[in-house]
Length: 462
Ligand SMILES: [Zn+2]
Image (cartoon, rainbow, N blue to C red):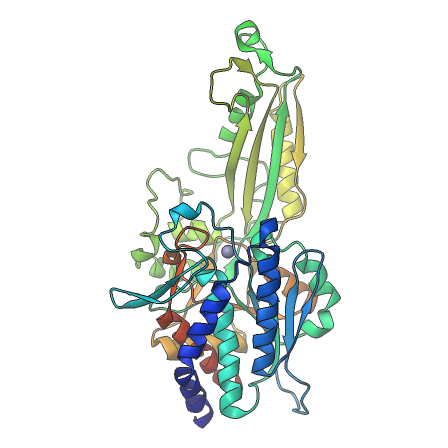
């Protein structure tokens, strides 16, 4: 395997440079969700365009209605029937939140040793600048070692993932010819553990909804009318409390109608994974309710859920105010599994609320669209090649995992481009993503880059 060995050597020889460059990227405050992030977004996009060009790809910054996409492609070759591989990553980051909660400044990363681990801290260090850097450096190493790319290559780097990707569907639609590919590697996911690689093959869908209940009157004096007039907070609380029964099941009519049961084979595999309890140590689950008849992983990855994300109404001020509020609002999110349609789930919820609404009160709903769940094919040759490549680098079997999260992009790519998607990543729950002191370590960076090169080799040797 002279190709593989020379590419791996190129990675190792070049690793100091790889780290130094990644720290440069993490230092750019490319926050997509705040107006002040604009200059950082522009700088990060230019920085990436330059790096992708230095690898030998033709890279351009393409403006959208929101933040730009950096799109790069390998030069047209005469190779007959080379597969075309797409790599997706995002270069925008979450806001820092209260900077005083960070022990390390969010945009001044440097490598420090902590108990033998070489870490660097910074917003975006893990989510997701290290991720996109793994495949860029792998492409660089392969090109250096071989003088060519392992296949036809497309790289798409998005700048508004942390803001819900509002411009991405239109972008994908408008650039479907550039984006056409045999497989899309979505590099924005977690490993199973620090030593065990994973490919995410099952993602939930997501629907957001806001509901406001209005009383027949505006705010009233609670002393005068509390005994007799409708209280929207009480009505809303009742409605929300009725969503789940004691077994943790959702009480909304028709909610489970289209839900596909978790296949037995999968249940067995997940139960096996659950023996590794380390996965749950990050969070204290006491007081939570898991749907009866399902294990924690089954509920997280394979069962639909409703979450109440926020409630507002009435007196929120510092002092007492004896008010009978005129309205109350809740925000909810629905996590869908295969079979469920966003519109149908939303309609079911609205019908449920209306059925509980007392006379004289009115309701207003805000929300549209949403994404469906995605279950990726488990027997594709690209997925198999990726699993083998990861396994060789980490010397540990690749876990095929699910997630409670959604990556709407996966649905768009598979529907619009007909592309197969493989969702891979090298981040961990302990990286404090979206939180203060987000971090990453150089070992995972190195092994992440090396993983891709092994995957390229495996794709070439089906
Ligand atoms: Zn994120």
